[in-house]
Amino acid sequence: MTRIRQIKKILKGKPIIEGAGVHLKRAFGFDLVPQLDPFLLFDDFRSSDPDHYLPGFPWHPHRGIETITYMLDGYAEHSDSMGHQGTIGPGDVQWMTAGSGIIHQEMPKGDKKGVMGGFQLWANLPAACKMMDPRYRDVAQATIPEITVDNGVKVKIICGTVNGIEGPVKDIVIDPQYLDVAMPPNVSFSHPVKAGHTVFAYVVEGEGYFDKGKDAYAYEVEGVNYFDFKRECLVGPANLVIFKDGDQVLVTTKDKQLRFLLISGKPIKEPVAWYGPIVMNTQQELKTAFEEYQKGTFIKHPAPRTQD
Image 1 (spheres, one colour):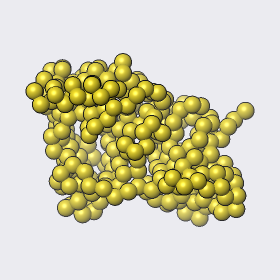
Image 2 (cartoon, rainbow, N blue to C red):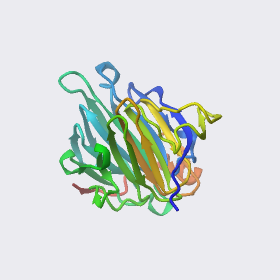
Image 3 (cartoon, one colour):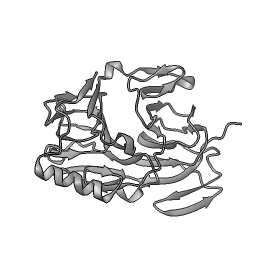
């Protein structure tokens, strides 16, 4: 029997400043660990003000995680201490596995109109993989399949499978799905997900329903529980929906179109020791990582493996 996932919690992206002065909205981060295991952080960094993004993210280390950057507008120039460098633009994805350690920088640039934007997701690595070789997967927009499913719904498949079509990012330890879904008004979209996996949706633009009955459910908004069997819950831009367990997601639209990211992954269920850009399992591992960074012994491999 199919179990359609209902809303567990709705989070509103909160404005913060990161890096050397980048203004962004953080949908979740440290304070939600381990509720979104294996995911750690999700940032929306869209802006049309160059002063809010040009300072960028200068040189900094990562260990024990993967960072997934998905660009919508403008560009992100990236380089690292092992010689890898490049630029991702509109529709491109960079899936970086920091593993045992990378020191890199990410410098956003606007398009001709000064618009820059996209999303960054952090995914945890299990203890057995935290010290794996670093690697990059720079995924060009042209390699990301976009299909039209029932009711004119369009789905870009970055990672995972829809209607037998598989996305270009494969062999990721947390078994993730990462979809970009665009829906016209007054339609429905259903998608199978694995029971037991963490599943969330982030609204890019428009609004829609993310619950089974539209007007009969229990949910939580910013830490407050709501049990409301009459009020409809239309979820709008910069809101993140965390789902309860089940094996299918059902989304419907009303009068407006809707674009959202649908992301899922297998929980790791291990202790998390996190400070800044490094995430390990114990405080001692965290201490060792920062001591190595200060001593110049942080990098364990001479060059990352690169997969286009």
